[in-house]
Length: 369
Image 1: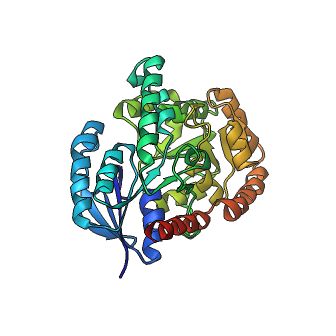
Image 2 (image 1 turned 60 degrees about the horizontal axis):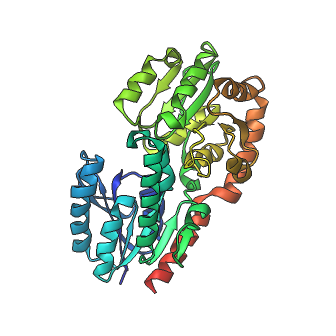
Image 3 (image 1 turned 90 degrees about the vertical axis):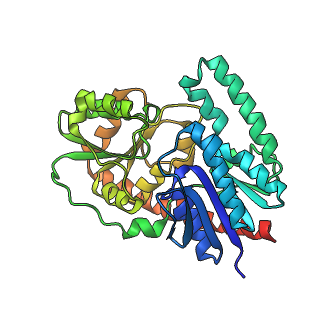
């Protein structure tokens, strides 16, 4: 009889790359009976996973924390799974409730939340954010001791938890999906196309990318793929002079995103130097590499050591530095092919999901033993 597995998220949507396409799909292929309680328009089956729909529209923090988490818990109890695997920090309380019922529980830590809190200016002045950050850090680490395992998105994050079964399962890209994608047909091959993929926020450098595109006076075009964090930011970006040299494609299915990356010339990842980002492993960097593209990326010391010579490292807060990074490739396009091929080889050897999948499956066997 198959072991029943239940993944839970109230913050993410059904097509989340880490949750559905990687972890749930890998577990399903390994023979587990996998369900996923997540934001969706209706119950369905995707990638061998039974989607149990939560209200698709209500994704506000307060609604998630108070109402949606309660609904998710009720659905989880109804499933009566052998193991529960949750993905959001606001679901720690849900995880504790499942432990009290004698269930096996894994907490999947996607982000360093205490560091994230320090960067959230809407929470108040920095001294208040430091207090909140320390308080949450104590709460998260203390509660996590009782879970059967911790899965973190990086080695550094995994090391912060006092849990004997704390491991990293990095958010590496799936090789087969990328290799099957075909590049879209470009309208104008004369322009040099740079591409940004992912959530669109101020601290991920979107304004600077639009501003630097303006400096090229139409010779460079910026493709933007992903959701804006707010309508306010979207309007602000559209009002910038450089936006006339940009194309916004919205949020697309993962397999379609790769078709756009393959058609572009250069991948962009100029995140601000926040504490949370300086030691992160952005999935977009790996996706650009897998699609045989060089990059312009933030000059974080951790990134230089982790990724190596994948392109040009620049100051993400200085548009002239970003401009120089782009010009390094636009003025000598032979570099695109040379570094692009090296990046793809590095991805295959070091950064594909296959390696992380093995760690995930080994942990599941250990927890369910």
